[in-house]
Length: 316
Ligand code: ING
Image (tube, rainbow, N blue to C red; front, side):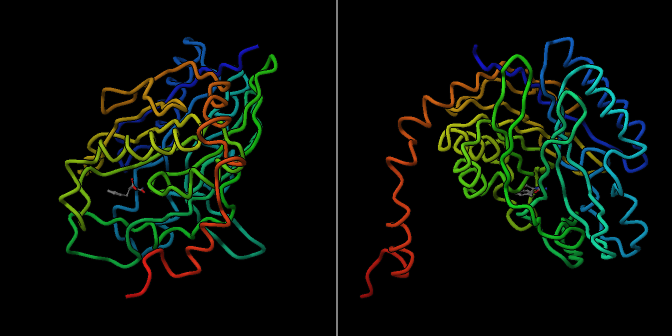
């Protein structure tokens, strides 16, 4: 039986700072119900999907900062999402700010989980590539303080098995936003035979340190996910928090990419929108068993030798 997973990229439009979690969850449930009507097995939400993208502001009050984090998952505000997964027999991937108590020590991560169609958490990831800066930089039109508010993720890039009923099981992985720009993200998951990578993001059009890149924000968004997909023979689902959010224009451009690198579905608005694709996981084999057959064609021993020789260019 073909392992076809129908996936909904559930893009969210702007979330205002004053918007309550209940209001956001209402929006997410509307997308989940629409996805079910279209036969989706899985819905993917953006990074930090429950609140506005708060790292754009410099804050000093820990209580204010922590108001953007979840202390439990599911918690009172998100239980309805888990209930919907069970009712609809449809999984979801959710990005959120995680406040964890680690033996009395409070830790904060930019986290994503995957929940299956029975309402069980089957995958968890904590963002590793934290972009931006840690101190207030008033020269910027807006801040990007992920290095201030989050620790670097400590779970690696774990791939995990997910079952979508009737023998349709696949190997999934997650990444978050800036992770998608780094080839290591895809390759570490690729070395675990990943077949679909779920990635939520909040990406401002304007990047203060490099405004010359702004016009290429959509191109770079597609480039990195198309190459990551193709070079590892995996599906990639990239989902935006889009639109003008608290005065900052964030790209939409949510896409579903096939293992061939082709974009097979895309959002066309900057609001709440579903892009849906029937993803045949067996397509991965056409790339994993030929051009990107790691066992036959990769040469890690040679890479190591070149690195140890301090680069391939011989000294003058
Ligand atoms: N956001 C951005 C991203 O990597 C960024 C950071 C903004 C990079 C603008 C380049 C240009 O998509 C997050 N949250 O990582």
